Amino acid sequence: MKISKYPPKEDLKLRWEKVQTFMKEAGADACIASTNVNIYYLTGKIFAGYVYLPSEGEPIEFVQRPNSLEGERIIPIRKPEDIPALLSGKGYQLPSVFLLEADQITYNEYLRLEKALAPGTASNATPVLRKARMTKTPWEIEQLRISGTRHAEAYKSIPSLFRSGMRDIEFQYEIEWVMRQNGSLGIFRTFGHQMEIFMGSLLAGKNAATPSSYDFALGGGGMSACLPIGASGDIIEKGQSIMIDMAGNFTAYMTDMTRVYSYGTLPDKAYRAHEASIQMHNRLLETAKPGTECAEIYNWSLEMAEEAGFAANFMGTVQQAKFTGHGVGLEINEPPVLMGRSKDTLQPGMTIAFEPKFVLPDIGAVGIENTFLITENGIEKITVFEENIMKLE
Image (cartoon, rainbow, N blue to C red; front, side, top):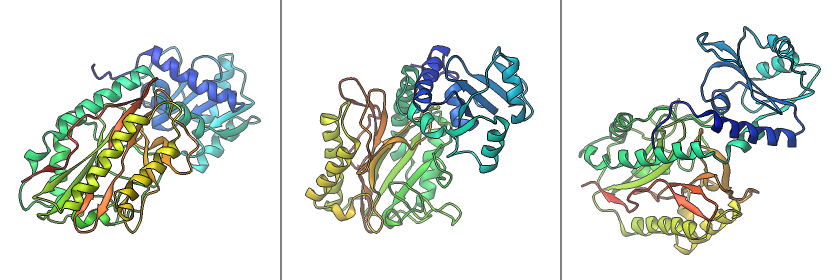
């Protein structure tokens, strides 16, 4: 397997067809995408402008920048108000119902596009596009496998990077550098305007119990009030766990993997809680298959945490996350979400991250996270690496 800069056209066609199927279900004639993630999903590249996908046929790329792009279906454009005339000039009938990324673009851009395509009626494209991206094409799965393999290779270097007396942020810098050397793109794309993070997080000792303002499984105080997540700058002490949760963005498609290291030996309860997380992963591998309800996975995770005696520590302490996993792909937090109120079921082609974790005050966080592919017959782990707590010294 190799990293491809651009997806093949046959793979792009599979994506268009998925989106078009869901567009028709929504009663839409066209979909207009202008955000980086969705432009990439539909065209295999990123540019400033708009992708116009009709309910039948191939998309048209209305490009503002760069001016170097060329192609049969690429049309230079100055402003969105030019789109209707350009469509008519290509023989397209203007849509009666069109979809815009209402959950992602600004209110002003939404109104501008809506007015430009009047008298057509606008509706929300975001659920349609996220639903299409929820199951991956063969090429996308290949890219995720590459990310998973390189993710594990980078984690192998972690023990050699640790030095006694290190601050948690210094350790994280070293890990980020190794990941970049191994090909990480260095960008952590998330869905949601209040979800900000760099390449991932490292949580050591008591900092792991600090609640997050973001909808992440665990928090950490961060280095600044402007980015309150992850490493806090504290010195790593003996008897603390170090949870490393860095994004495997070695291709456009991200894997999510968490592993735990210890500085010295941890108290016995840390190993018992960590083992409970491993057992949850084993149960997922044994039972998950197409048709499995996401809510069911969440519910039995809670039950297993209770049986292990760590319900009060599960997915946090003072602030407990109400999910145990999520979809991954172009963004780290794609659907489906493994939570109690989910109506989704697992389907072939989905890629999910499962992350049952525990926070033990003063010791730190324990538990693992892996990325899985849902296959026709079951589930496959694509982040394969040592899962026990690994001792640094």
